Image (cartoon, rainbow, N blue to C red; front, side, top):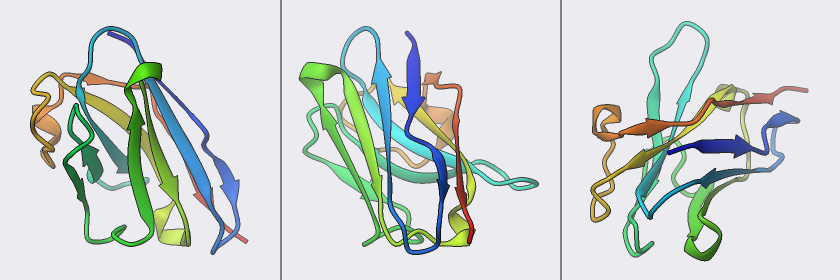
Amino acid sequence: VQLVESGGGLVQPGGSLRLSCTSSGRIFSMGWFRQAPGKEREFVAAISGSGGSLFYADSVKGRFTISRDNAANTVYLQMNSLKPGDTAVFYCAADRDTWRTSTDLRDYDYWGQGTQVTVSS
């Protein structure tokens, strides 16, 4: 299984970015995590295989939206009202248990290579 992220970049505070993660193989539950320099990788958002269950970290609730297009094997993370504190490498991850939306990175079986998001003026 390969996960390929895209969409990262440099954006000013208050701006928006949309990350994409395209997977090979079957449908998985998907999650987005991020890791800032010197910090542990942390949960951002997750979506079940059907797309019917979503979960967000409190720090991004109301600003980020996770969605998926199963026909395209792609999961998206729309990020609005970005803050400097959102600066991190963002990773998508796939969980073979398609019913759950786990916040625990240990539940995820496959990981992408990461894409850098930098929020700065």
